[in-house]
Length: 214
Image: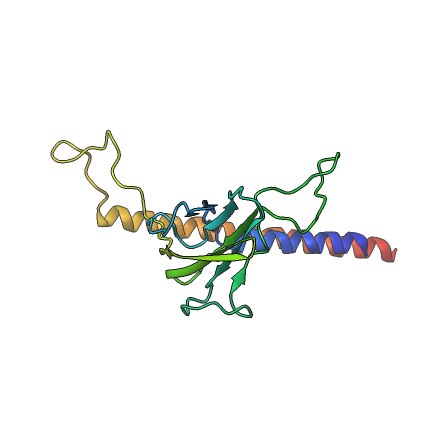
């Protein structure tokens, strides 16, 4: 039975490898937002390079005595903050005390907070608020960030590319048709190879079963 289960698992993995198409993923990039006693350094974020799947890293850099900050993020883009629907950081301070082992004395202490956008996040303008508190005095700064669509464009011409007369002819419709046929043959070959492998494993299972019945 153990051998049968092992072969069955191998067969399943083989089929997954053969049938599933290859896929790529966007590499997440993180933008640092510095918060000081005078406000947010980066202010409103409009860079077109900030796209779906990227993240914001808020860092508290206000060293004023008894100062703390909280970031409130309008994650549903309705223009206001709702604690049950949106996101909010913990209380952030400039520095956390550490013991002799380098561990946090207070495990809830934090100096930064990260908000990551989903790969399919809605594109548009998101609002966020930074609430600063010092000795009972509160200040709020309003800012926004524009999230752009993550479009994977094909590479354009590069240095050394040939243009105009004297350059190799572009692929014709006949060439494209031939390439398409070859691509179809390759897929058929892979599927046939997978089927043959499964038949071979089925025969092996049958042989093992007969050996155990003797």
